[in-house]
Length: 416
Ligand code: ATP
Ligand code: MG
Image (cartoon, rainbow, N blue to C red; front, top):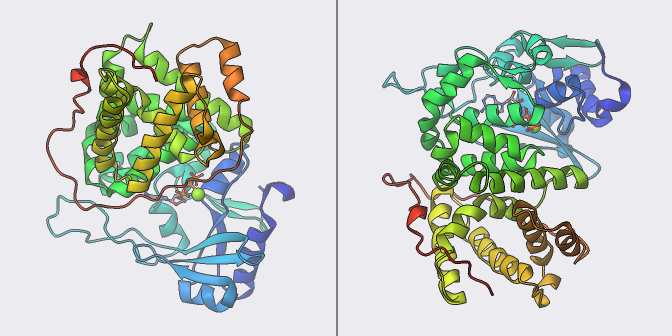
């Protein structure tokens, strides 16, 4: 089968053709093939080839840069760097990972292989399809086409093994199921529940990035619901999980959280792209932080409580200092906005972000439509960027993970 011309990136096809003309095999692989098959617009067109990174460099010369240490691959540029494609050499499954035998965690992933082996080392069957546009073929060694038809996320091989090899795949399974509205195959679901604690073994910056991806993709509500339902949320964000567990679904807590997430998804669809990471994170942590700071009697007390909680969660999620500071400021701005005091900060880069957060907050709280609308139109959205890089602060401390949000003191709302 062949996708319509307009749906496949012409520059990606140029990369594939040039590699083939140079005597190599090359395919469009992974997410793009999956998204095209389910009828979505494909985002990144990743390319897999039997050319080694140095070979790719030789073919594309100054339009190519080799990157990565754990996973070396080539970036090929078009239009003076405006467009960029990932060209990865076929890999096979890493073997002999650890002497202890019981430890399956993959630590290095650079053994080259052939196309078939490359398909099998991938995470899910729906992500392992190889597309050859010119021949009009999809190569499927793992049953991915059937799973796309049945709308199911299934690991390639034994899910117990695959999730233990790389626990971040647990979050990826949730992300794909939520985003595509697919089911997770029952054995995979059981394996997620069984191995969710092993997420603690993955590098925190990777975890943090995957959590952001759960929120960016337009299916934040389904993602967080699935994470909660599988008990994964209790591992990655115990504060929020405990909050949802305690709240009564009808009146309160959980309903507010899921309404907020649904609003994120609505705004993401409306804008045709994700909200700022800082807003996403602020919405995610909003209820636990609010509960934690409820007892504050003065603005100063409130700020101290909020910062304390941000620092605690930030440490666990490997949030940078800059992001933590951004969070602190956006929460303060949100409080002022909701109290009807916009002030000069709306003109600052954080202004539109605080506005987004305040809108989501009002929607979550079920505020009257006019009030939401007034806030929504308060400032003209401006494209402000606050992409966050996570920093690994080394191994995570063990011990208590319960945020202690329950001891937050008297239940009064503080107003500023
Ligand atoms: P998205 O639309 O979110 O980018 P994607 O499928 O393209 O989805 P990427 O994270 O960009 O996901 O990864 C590209 C491909 O690399 C995946 O489709 C999958 O085949 C493979 N892959 C990514 N992460 C893993 C992993 N942890 N284990 C095995 N294979 C992986
Ligand atoms: Mg991708």
